[in-house]
Amino acid sequence: MLVTSFNNNQLDHIETFQNRFIMLDELIAMLMKQINEVNKSIANGTSEVKEPVERINTMVSRVAANIDLAEERFKKLKLEFNSYLFKNI
Image (cartoon, rainbow, N blue to C red; front, side, top):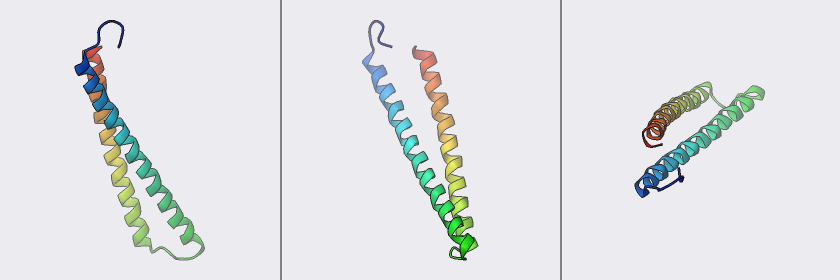
């Protein structure tokens, strides 16, 4: 991008994309934590019935909804970023 002159306005857009990608990365980290919690609950439930099935189902539903949300956000962000690159580079 810095081949010749550089538009500072582009820097603002690039920074915005960077911040959005970072937020998406944080969402993915949260999902990984939730998945680990579900796995731990399932593992605990195999030796003894410590976690009621309803609680595990609720946890799985929450994780699934968050995965769907992350997937949609990523698709949208990727499309916007690729569109930005196509128009500006």
